[in-house]
Image 1 (cartoon, helix red, strand yellow):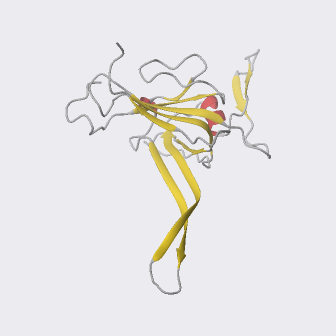
Image 2 (tube, helix red, strand yellow):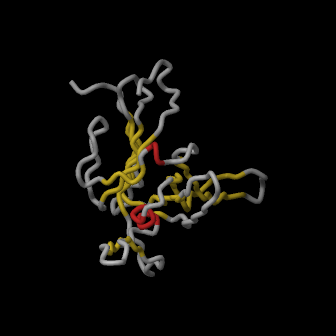
Length: 196
């Protein structure tokens, strides 16, 4: 997909990949390796696209002798990756439900084959994954890419399935990004030169 000057104005699509925690992120100009699973291709998402949104809580300090804040302390920071996947396969539902197992039942005499997933999610600690958002354009020039790298995230969205005339079934994903063991939330990497 060509990107023309001014390069910093982007309107391109993105793909979403997931991998086990600790998987190395690919170079910004390389295809993701075999450990990375394509969760959502740009052609499988609704036109609203992929939203990467941050939120924070700041506690302000006020003094007796003034009306304005004197200092602020950040006490919370959240980052979310949101998109809607148009995919009604059992595998997509399993991904939306925190990676539930898909059971395949083979067809037999007089019985159809089918796939099943459990809808109840287990309690306790939530399974997390590494998350990669790959953008097919770079704000620095044509023929380059960018990516968002999140070492630890989980789908915190509430899955809603709606069957409506003329409207594709969509699975809403809302990945909450968590800090990894080193306190890193993630990185944005934009290619600014071709490899030499």
